[in-house]
Length: 555
Image 1 (cartoon, one colour):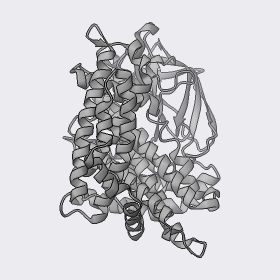
Image 2: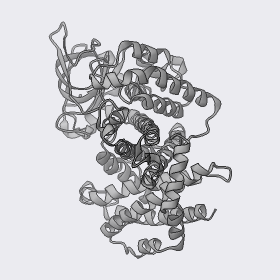
Image 3: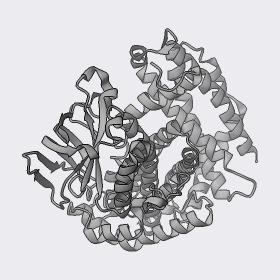
């Protein structure tokens, strides 16, 4: 197929241009053989564009590489639509990178005029091509980007999609509109489905293999649940995922034996207390203080955006246990603070020894059901047994947290895919039912073009998420997990926005599920690493380190 050959040729040239841009930008940030923080900050604009280019390029390459002669025509159409749109964005982003790095933009301009790019753009970006792809999306009822799975994963996908449709969806609107806490009967149903033990090895009561990780299972289940509701189902897995990986990375044998079976059973539920009011995603600047006392630690300070803190029975608290604040991330530890579980939007815990913990739910435009809390710790006691890693774990909390964040970012990309899938299916149904100017909305050229691009973005993000899950299970993929999180979460905003737009006025009504998809999707680019921090501090830096052959984190 000429268009497919053209896509492969264009992507190969883009990869060479991109790699050259990364090397040049990285060289400009070098000082004495290391990446210099001041220089990195000076080129943030170009670095941000570079990170996005890396995400879009990898997604397009992955989508095209997955195609085979036996691929369904719609799969090929959507992969080419996404690639054509990605190339347009990539060329503009490379202009910024090349200008900042002092490279001659002539090669980028030559690709703009290349015959293979013109062929691809006509084949995938023309009105006829977009309409044809859009009609395919409509015929498929929005069920696009399906990926062949082995039997265990396919069965899990079927079971959780059915659970989401039959159990989660009927409760989702009320939870959102009335700002309820996820009800206990729904949580109990999810416990029985084994949702909370997906990352926990079987020997500790979970469903993950004892000898390896199964990130793909977590992605499959999360996507299915998020299609039913992001806040009432899909996001419940994130917190045990992060805490589990932190315990597996640094917990003592006793801590693993105690906590992992409890987390797998979903009793207690857990929450993650990392973000602080004045420091956002800058975890190394954490100020919440842990002071050693007889038998444990007293916590003093504030956390914010601690999701599900009310319902949780244990909080994973990133705490500064080193007295020297100049140590930055090296002075952090992870402490497990226990508390009673409550359904209310405010709570206060008084310990017998005088310690106090208060929490207040933050009113939000979406992502209701789990609620994110402001927390205040005042001499709140945590025993030595609850310091992850024990005495040897003091000062290593940053690294334990990073171990959890890879899984958290993969899980968040799956959440985004689930929301996109729900939004696309809703948009297809509505455009078929809604008549304007005497014809179904789905028959109009612009509607079909919109649905084509929405379907193409969903399919590309799904393919990338499933592919990166395999890389993570192989022991790598920290940067790739950040790339797919970056792309999928912004894509969820775009797809839900277009889905709402296709609903017209009804899309703005709370009674329509697509309005919930739209406001829920907006949080995804903020949680589990705000996209700016993710792009600059993880993706761009990792790309530069790879280009220069520097060990990760050298500075």
